[in-house]
Image (cartoon, rainbow, N blue to C red):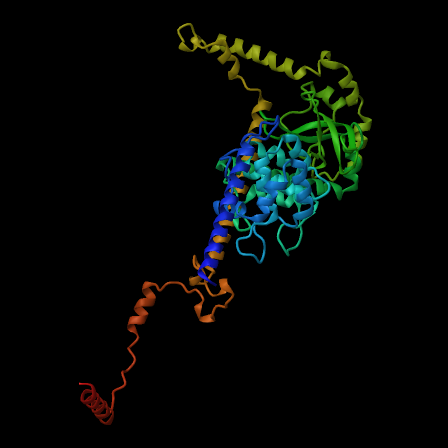
Length: 503
């Protein structure tokens, strides 16, 4: 190749690099100028989007990404491109050196276009292609607020739609992919942004809870009697409930409605959901199959309401001994034979003594306790008299509240210990896998990494200890072979001839 041809080739390379940089800068400015209502706020730099620098550099220089920036000017066009072009979710293209995949090129283009909450909801629920959904999850994992990730991911933790994540590998499910994004930092040759440690462990605890809910749902599906009992209106069950202020725990509940179809789309659900009422507080919630269980299976702080024993036995259900061998039909008969059903109590409203008994009982106990303390413990010269009435009132904690709090704390402690145990096992497995590698494989490119094979003698061996060195020192050295007189004379003759020839 002539010198002028080399110059032209170098000039073309520089021109392509300049054009790629200009396209990238224009895309960044386009995203920064986007002020559409409802845009998901991005966390981190708005010019790298927490993507690994090497991967980001290769994407911005990719001709396909430049084509996307020129032709894909809105969200709808990008979603159509995902539908037609994306076939896997790895960051790199197999068999090509440093060539980014179409999935990550389109992901970066989505970052520059920005995405609203409504558009993200449509992506996560898209029915045409699972890759549209997976790119939506990646968008949230890379750049969304970590504190809001769980609310986006939770409904899809066990989604069973099939998707191919790795090229040439077996398919997995969208649910497994979502759980992997929450649990791992490594992502098929690149790294995801690190989550805050406290939030990461909180996610793992919630994933463990979701795993138990899924196992419980599968167990109920296999038990026909349990399913019939749950789907009977008025059945007294236990259900999980929690909110922003209170952790998820078990409460007594009553089935008001069985939901077999999705409330928005009208499609038939794979598993029924239940609209239940918690008589202790009077609120109504919709729970899944895994979030309900038979009465008496889990410990609850108090019985239903706070009425006296006779009223409770007449209108409620008896606690169930798990070792008594009673069948689900017995629970149904007990509920049917009860003298006063749930509906009778519920219709009485808030004026009924049993509906407000818990609050009345609490107020009376607190009032009586305050007077006892004033008469017995508080003296005129006692400095505790200076305490405010608000602190007096806060000293009393109802027994059922304390026991329920202790039960929740114990369950959270158990879940956290399980999370830490899994983390230790994962770290130990990585350490063992690293130690099993040959010595030359650690941190450098070996013959096997470039297509060659290792010799059997190159296997890793532990370093010598003091005992091994002592044993090696005690072994006598091998005898040195001595030359004969004829061999010595031949060597001397050879030296003489060389000196005579070369001086």
